[in-house]
Length: 183
Ligand SMILES: [Zn+2]
Image (tube, rainbow, N blue to C red; front, top):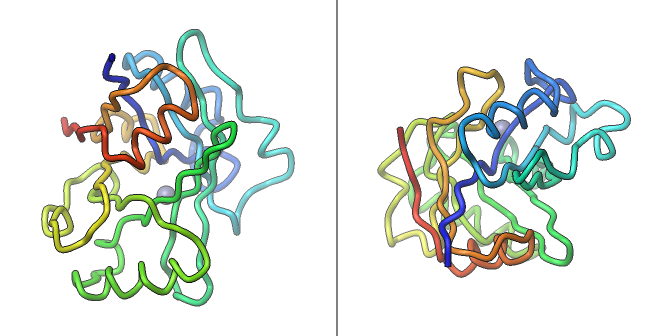
C-alpha cells in the first residue's frame, strides 16, 4: 500500500489565516502532498466556510475540518476532520498550554467522556515537541504545520499507509498506520 503524505491542520482567511482555502490547497499541491485538511477556528469562522473548502485539487484530496474549543477545558483546542463516514479527532498542540504529560492525560480523560480523541499533535506550529511523543500518552502521535501563512507550509506532516480515499486515510491514522515527517 502507498504512503500518502498529508497535512492535518491548516488555517485560511475564514479564520485567522492569511490565505484563501484555494491558495493553501495549492501550496500543498505544489509541495507534492496527497491530502490536506482545512481546519479553521470554530469561534472565528466566517459565513460560507464549509462550502468554500474545495473537494480536491488535481490528485490532492481536501478534507473539511474545524479546530474546536472545548469550553469545559479552557483554551484547549482540538481538530475535527470529516471523512465520508469517519471523523478524526486530534488533541492539538499541548505545548501551547505548557501541559505536563499527566495534565495531557487528564484532559484526554475529560474530553473522552463526551467524544473519543484519536491522536495527539506532537508539534507546535510545525516544530517538534519531543516531550509529548511518549508512550505515556496512549494515543498515536501526529505532526502538522498548523499553517497560517504560505511559509508555514511543509514543515511537519504525516505519511499514512492507506488507500487513496478519505475514510481509509482517517481509519489508518486512528489505527496508527502512519509515520510523522519533519523538515
Ligand atoms: Zn490551529
